[in-house]
Length: 419
Image 1 (cartoon, one colour):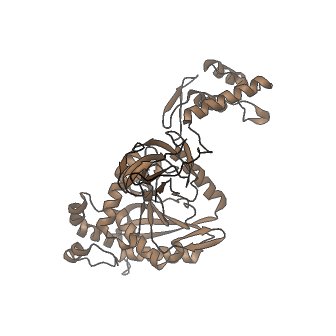
Image 2 (cartoon, rainbow, N blue to C red):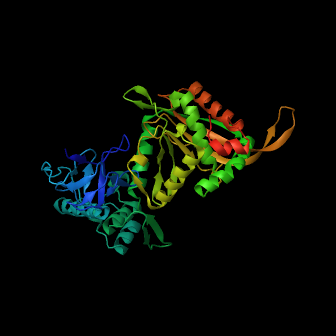
Image 3 (spheres, helix red, strand yellow):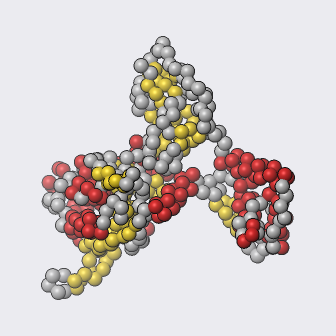
């Protein structure tokens, strides 16, 4: 029986994806899990794998490069030699425009409308001069100022759209007294911003912060570092330790490993920890599945692979989906503390600052500098309350300050596990 090929839903907000290219031609044989297509989602460029082994057949009309295809719509089939596949109708909701073409289309539509109804142009002399320098008809520009007045920002935005520039491309416009540069957002950056705005507007969020003495955690890191380097080629990072510890705590504090959906709290059985990674094209959050069941070596390997993929923003659909909790670590950039925004529909996100020497009062009433790290938990109050969040943070702090793992190098090397 033919197996359907379609774009999977990677986030609760994902509704469509744009086909970048087919990597296999119709009639060619593919193996299960072979990458057959690249698509651009709201997260990154994702690799779509073949769901089965067989022959790629029946590519749907309209499922071409540049098309915006709905999630879950059948695009083709994987069949056996000689096996017939259904004939699919053309995609009904298909757009094959690039970002630049869409901008040009909007400009042309605005021009047509302006010719039909030419309103009075309201723009100050300075804005009219800039429009002349950029060869822009102010009659085509929509003003966002009071009473529809055209502002300088409106003219420059129109110029950028008309130019059909690409994400990340600098647009230099020379004006008096100084040149200005405008940068187009990538799809990932634009949609991430929209999701974060929606998160702030729809979820009542608050933050709790604790400081953890990292003395013992850093000693543990040094004890394990040679083994991790031998296994992965990289030093054991604070992020790897955090992923394992947080995953363990999530099993004990299920309200943090939850989603708020349809007025109810869904408690997830799997602990899938997303790790925010910054790249040129924007922020991406690949997911370490069942992190509580994986060793430090396994987590380090996955994070290493994710960082390499983030440079090109190319991930498989599975790597970006299914997250139940998110960690965002900006400590490596010298940030002491920050508040992250909840990644809906998850109930919380942990923001991690750098490890910094801080005066700490010891039980014997002496004060000594200790390596301290700030942890800030941002919470969707609909899914968790302050007490639940405090308990979650307290357990993370305890496990960082007193790692529940044998510090002897030999045993640690044999297992590299946190219990």
